[in-house]
Length: 162
Image 1 (cartoon, helix red, strand yellow):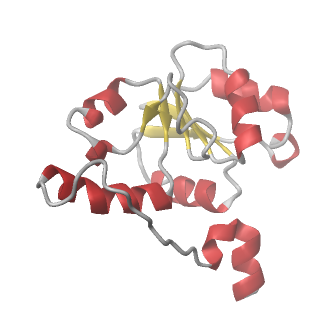
Image 2 (tube, one colour):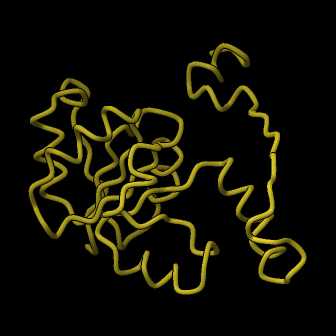
Image 3 (cartoon, helix red, strand yellow):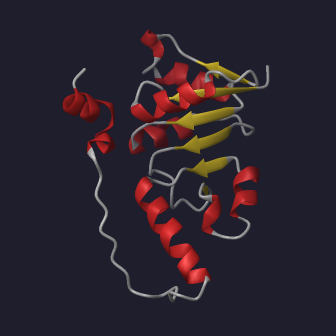
C-alpha cells in the first residue's frame, strides 16, 4: 500500500471521475465510507484525519466545514470547490500560472483547484504576457460559456437522461 486518499463528495461528477482515475492504481488506498455515513460529519472528519490526502469535491460551504474538521496537521487537502481559491494560506493549484508554482504545489498541505474558467483564461493569457504580446495590466473582458455538464450530476442526468 502507498498512501491513503479520501474523496469527500465521491458521488458527484468530479468525485466519481477522480475515483475512476485512481481506482486502478496499486500505490493508492482509496478510503470510502458506507452509504449511510457519506453525509455524517463526524464519520467524514474521522476519515479525513486518518488519511494522507483528502480531495474535497463538495459545494463551497461544505468544503469549508470539511476543512474545519481536519485536525491532523499532516493531511494534505486538495479542494475542487472555489471556497479556498483566494485564501492566503492555500496554494493555487495551477502549475503553469507562474515560475515555481509547481514546486509550491508539491510542498503545500492545502491546494485549491482552479476552476475551468480561470484555467482557460490563465492558460491563454499568461504566455501572451510573458512573450510581451500583452501588457499584464491590459483591460480585458473574457466571455465564457459553460455547457450542461457544469451543472453537475443532476444537470447531466436532466440533459442525457438517467
